[in-house]
Length: 119
Image 1 (tube, rainbow, N blue to C red):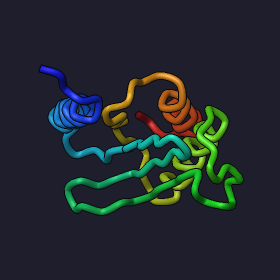
Image 2 (image 1 turned 60 degrees about the vertical axis):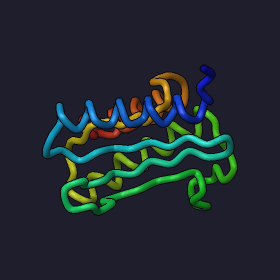
Image 3 (image 1 turned 90 degrees about the vertical axis):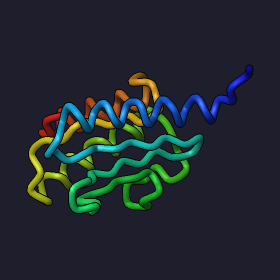
């Protein structure tokens, strides 16, 4: 029985998210989404259901509109760390979704760590 790539992705995303929720209760979630053209990151408080901060390559002031590269991912990671500090957030857990922790997703996490966010 063949399973589509999308179905496998969704199963992997739920498996990762549920595992992280059990281990990191009470902390905010740094969720990353990567599309073919853009990359976006949100800092989410799951208890209240509120997004505390977000950053994306869709923002014109970052200068990476329509770009999905490692340089753009690094810039987005640095911006989310800066915005998290402004929101008073020191630590969060990194939710990679269904994506592998490699390449652009890893660049976001590394830049956020360098920016002072504990993930």
